[in-house]
Image (tube, rainbow, N blue to C red; front, side):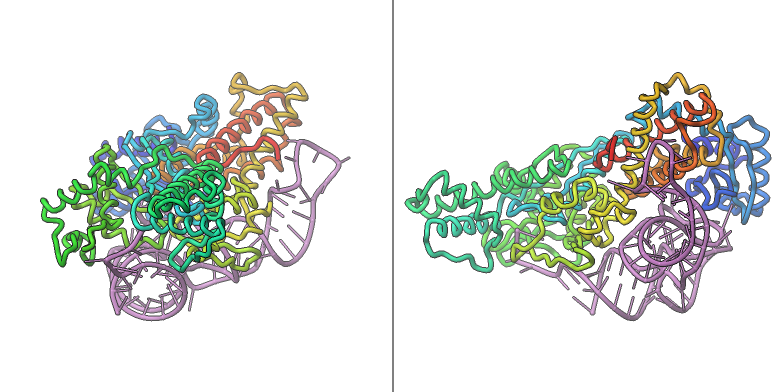
Length: 551
RNA sequence: GCGCCUGUAGCUCAGUCGGAUAGAGCAGGAGCCUUCUAAGCUCUUGGCCGGGGGUUCGAAUCCUCCCAGGCGCGCCA
């Protein structure tokens, strides 16, 4: 059991004895300064009003009650305006090693999510070109969040929504068609509305290789259809490869077209009409979003009869709910933030709580090289592709960088910096801690020293301040996972891993392991290191970053 | 004009449900390898938490007004 839970249970019992209840708002957390002990609680200050006495007196009463009991606590102190500061016995912390050793890969798992069914939809870039660096950030956040939430006891499914319907696809087909005609020596020009990217040249080349000049003989509509389908297929394959190279998994690929073909969109629109949430006006169909959270009504079907993306987006979200998810997480580029109110309105119109849709807005990535901005313009086709960045800086560094920031803060991504092996680029700091431990175990094996669970008996030798620092840090891991899941914030985990790696590096520098003064101490430190390696590896896995055994 | 996000050390950023004297890395300064990986460690300099008001035992955190930067406000996608 975690120290936090242990204390909350203990305090709840004691408070009950005193005729008080554990206040939900109270917190049990590590205090800023070590001299205040392992964990601090503010319950006395919160309860002071209802108990009608001053916080310090109340804290003292609670303390007296606790001291009458048998517990893992070494000391209880009151301090400041009414904090209760707790210090645990050393064996409480030492036992974390046994727990890690028992649970191994599962250490850090919890039932925090209570099996809640969650769907995370992310990337969902239109299949009109390769993924760029901004998509990469969303991909890293979504994939890691899925891993973290699964670990924290949620039932998570990941999904990519494929916009394979609508005008954009037509434009894409025409752009490829023009490229194809160019290859055939026909004078046709891309205009501003077309996709300019070089990758369409590859698409056109592929068609030419397959069909020769055959398309020129066809009706234009047929040729366009071939161009469109080939382009979408090839681009989609590229996107899938980019994602798998980035170790990003989407369990479901959901086609917008299928929503239309299966009449899910039209059924949804009918339902909105029935509920009075949609109305006809000037030949178009409108969604009455002002009745809910939006500041103006939105068009669902244009007067020319075509659907807006919003119409299929509503149908798509309805379909998600119909599949039984309790929580929908959408990860969008921050430039789409204006859609949040209308989407929340749509959710409400579907009869669901707006809180059952969480939109994570991922800020755009500012790509730099040695501090100088690299210009990016999607329209001109001059964006920097994710695959190029991966090739240059590597998957691990790229993912860790994306996951070391709050997703809604702007990210300066300096290519030269991300390649550096310094603390500007902490991924190596964390991985190095893991590699150091593995290397040490190789050395131990050479010397014929082995350490396994049979050495867990001498853990009481791990009693220095540095031992305890590292033990307490490891004990935090399950709570960090749960908090990252609850806040939909993978970056908490990145910062945690940097701290744990720091504890390990400090420990390593000062405390010899294989040349420690006694056999028991050697083994104790080895099992300590084994536990640290496990936690680092589990944490890195959740970030989608490798834990190398050698560097 | 309206709305959303951001503003914390020279730089890049953490700061969870409002908690104690605001943190980390980098950069600057001073040290540490005959010893398990120096991609490391130790010490140190550096702050009006954008600004003003408010809420309370207590505010970087909540409310309000202002300032600066980014983004969005279409029968576009």
